[in-house]
Image (cartoon, rainbow, N blue to C red; front, side):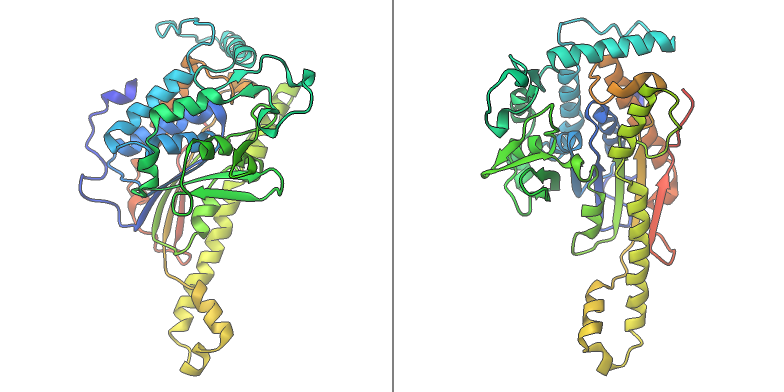
Length: 390
């Protein structure tokens, strides 16, 4: 990969860290697009950024487990092992790296052919099709109502992830899922749960492709059905801390007006799974501005007001914490089409990884990312990953 040849001076010297109490990596769901997140992490580790918290949804949960469940020097290697394993062609068709496809129509055809192969035969080390389609089955258990079996993913996670390390809480770890019976969204967090492969698989159990995952008698589906990003979970978590957060989105909220059915399907997915990251960030900015403003007001209130119930409630919300939120958003190529989240070919995986790496390097090259915000709300957002022409 081109990233391995990088010889520039690390942006954060070893033994130092940016002036924040917490560095967090937040990983959105998006299936095959998740290789972009692996590229982002490679750039972060080259920049000597030591994470305190990693949280993910769906494929973001898998990447989060590969990061939190390995020693720092092994994390990029384990990410690459996973992504090379799941991007192996189901029928053994080799990936010819030396052949570059420059024609967009040809590339679209190759992508769609690979995606069709995944639909028919599954992704090695990830999921395999059921022997008989579910339409021919009698009523069964919730754990088998799906087109694919995810048992291979469990085996892969057990091989590549040290769950004892995750549960040691050296790094905070959170993955989100939805309770099928109640519809409630829940985060499995290593501060409140003992994490095992089922928690990771539950976060990515997107119906009807994948079955619901049972955990302690309850069944869970993909967290992206409710919220496809852990950003709000991190921002609302108590106690608040000065935070440098890298929010890695696999679906862009911005897009063009579709002019055919395929483009309409792509745009629908983008809107559904982008989770309105910017809207959530803007709401948090406003709330944090109020917290910081009341913190200043508190210092001017007389003692008799400080003990009133109303002021005590507001005082619990007041703080002067600051946040830098760096958005890293994948912008797909036109030829990727509606199958981009399940097109697990090696060629496309390499492209996604390199895009994530390049976008992260570009973003980290801006020194303001590492500077504490001094605006009234104490929150700054950065997005250097604007859509570029294909």
